[in-house]
Figure 1 (cartoon, helix red, strand yellow):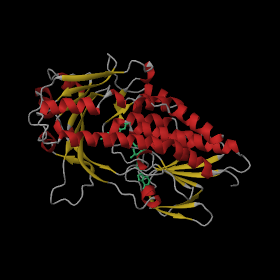
Figure 2 (cartoon, helix red, strand yellow):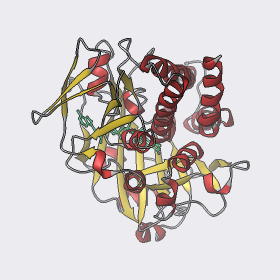
Figure 3 (cartoon, helix red, strand yellow):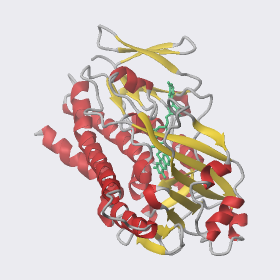
Figure 4 (cartoon, helix red, strand yellow):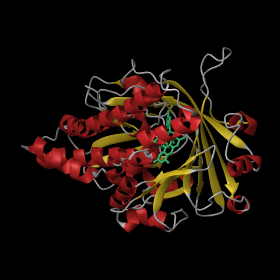
Length: 421
Ligand SMILES: Cc1cc2nc3c(=O)[nH]c(=O)nc-3n(C[C@H](O)[C@H](O)[C@H](O)COP(=O)(O)OP(=O)(O)OC[C@H]3O[C@@H](n4cnc5c(N)ncnc54)[C@H](O)[C@@H]3O)c2cc1C
C-alpha cells in the first residue's frame, strides 16, 4: 500500500461516530463517514450508559460532552431494580459496589449520547444524505461504493456501521439473514412531573416490572423533564402478516396495555397518562463466524456485526468497543511494519478480539432460551408470580455482570501481545 490508507465508514450511529473519532487520531489514515439521513439523528427514547460505555467514552474524549448534559443516576447508586409487575413486590436491586463513581450506570436520552459523540468528531469528515446502495470488489483489491445520489467512492477499507439492517453485511455475507424475533418493543416519553403524581410509582428508580414469558415494562427517569416508558411484548405474526418490518411506527396505547391486564395499579395509572407511543419490531440474526471478509477490505462494527436486537441494554457500548478495537488493530499493524503494513493483519487481530466476545454473548442468549424452555415444561406448573421470580433470578443474575465490567483495553492489549510474538 502506498500513501494513506483510505477508509469509508457507512452509518453515523454510535458505532460510526465512535470509529470516526478514533480514525481522526491515526495519521496514516484518510477517512470519510457517510450517513443516509440528512442529519445525525437517533431512534427510540432512552439509553443506558454502562460502565463499559463510560470507559470507551472516556478513551474517545467524548465523556466530558455527556457529563455536561442531562442524564439520570439514582441517588442510592442502584443500577436496576426488578419488581413483580403484577404485585409490585421488589424482587432484587443491583448495586455496583466496585465501580468507580464516574463509571456508574446512567440513563439518558439517546440524543445526548449521539450529541456527545458528534461533538468529539471532526464534522469535515462527515457526509450526510449519502445512502449506500451498492458495493463492488475491484481487481485492485479496493472496494467501490455507490450511493443513491450517484456519488461514487473507492477505498482500501470499508467499515460497515450501518446498523442491524446493514447493507454492507448483506453484501459481505449474503447468506446471513435476520428475522423478526416475535418480540415487539413499545417506547415513549412522559413528562416526569406527571409521573410524580402517581402514588406508589418510584419516579427516581431504574425499574423493570416483570410479567411471565419474558414480557416486561421498564420505567426510568431520564434526568431532565422526561420519564421513559419502554415495554417488551411477545407478538407472534398474525396470519395476515408475512413479516413484521416496521420500526418506530405510531401505535395505539391499547396495543401495548392489552399485554398487562392485571398489572400493579401505579403501572396501570402510568399507562393511562401515556400519550402517543411507537412500536419497534425486534429483529435479530445468528452470530457471524467472522466480522471481517476474506478479501481483507470489509469490516463490520456495531449492530451490523452482531444483530442482537438490543439484548443486554448495552449495544451502544459494544459498538464503541468495536470502534476502539478496529482502530487499535490498525495502529498495531501499522506500527509493526511501517514499510509494508498489512491491512489483513489488522483485520485478523480485530476479529480475534471481537468474535469470541460475541460468541460468549450469544451463549448467554442461548441460556435465556433454555430457561424459557424449562419454565414451559408441563410438569413444573408454576403460577405466574413463581415464574416471574425464577425468570428474574436466572436471567438477571450477577453472573452476567462481566458483560458490563469487561475491559476491552486490557483484553485488546493481551491479545495484541500474543499476536506480536
Ligand atoms: C429496544 C432497544 C433498546 C436498547 N437499549 C439500549 C441501551 O439501553 N443501551 C445501549 O447501549 N444500547 C441499547 N440498545 C442497542 C443500541 O441502540 C444499538 O446497539 C446501537 O444503536 C447500535 O449502534 P450502531 O451505530 O451499530 O447502529 P445504529 O444506531 O442503528 O446506526 C446505524 C446508522 O447507519 C445509518 N445507515 C443505515 N443504512 C445506511 C445506508 N445504506 N447508507 C448510509 N447510512 C446508513 C443509519 O441511518 C444510522 O444512522 C437498544 C436497542 C433496542 C432495539
